[in-house]
Length: 355
Image 1 (cartoon, rainbow, N blue to C red):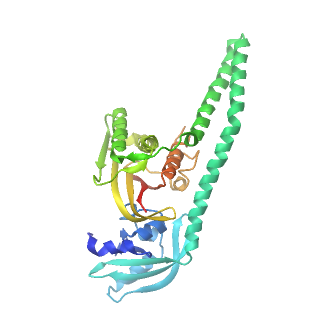
Image 2 (image 1 turned 90 degrees about the horizontal axis):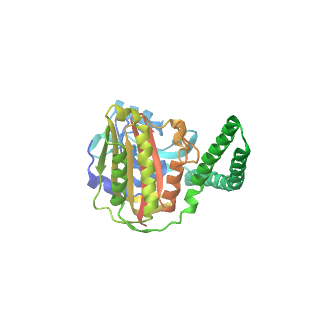
Image 3 (image 1 turned 45 degrees about the horizontal axis):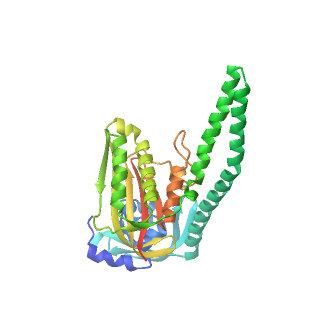
């Protein structure tokens, strides 16, 4: 259903979280405050069943459908909002029909304790940072002994006469090299200094797109949906290139079956969004980039921790690619989230433009 943009535009100025849903319980719109509360963008939430994170909504909508009336209302009812599996917050919800459109309802949400949401976000950020700090320290601790093990194995191989015994030393050297590569990847975000400059994000995206298309010349369609009015951002060109190279390569690797069937599709979109929260800061404008694929999706149990180091759903994967992406995005003052189900995975990135 097409909403009148003139009527909903003012909702983004509200500090209250607002959703507009149809009588089937599907989300038509969420404002900026609601995006911040749920940790998902309006584009991701569009067409999503509201009852998946607001179970009580099913009851409210059912009551309205039995007796549709402009007088229908739910006023400040205390209920539960599901931020993620196992994480609930108490909210006060008010429900009213949308003016002049009886097929739509407007739901206002006010956290019973705003500190609960802030604590949740702080907990996740602290957990992520503590994990990275632990692994960084661990990487430093094993780096030197690893070099000693490799050197000793080389000396032993040189002294051995038996070829079968030499094969064992080659295995040790090979595994030491593999672990050294893992250590280097763990330390990579902390070795690269952040060097921002005015950067055209579309130039970065086009460079990465051409690289991916050169690797996969058939079976993959890349759709570009760029907003040409997007201004330059303050960013590190090398880090930005690595961010989108990792994201697109990850997506393509997940599209293996679709590529064989010639149905694989990647969509890259850019938009300027207004009045959004990035972390704990509200920004007047931000750059929103979506990387969407039609692959098999990310298992639900991995979605909450997918940006943590060493977390991977791929056989043989290191689990460092998305962790590196997350670190680089944070260095830019931005945020990244993922929504995934079978047939659609959407990575949504926000980069600040104006406070």
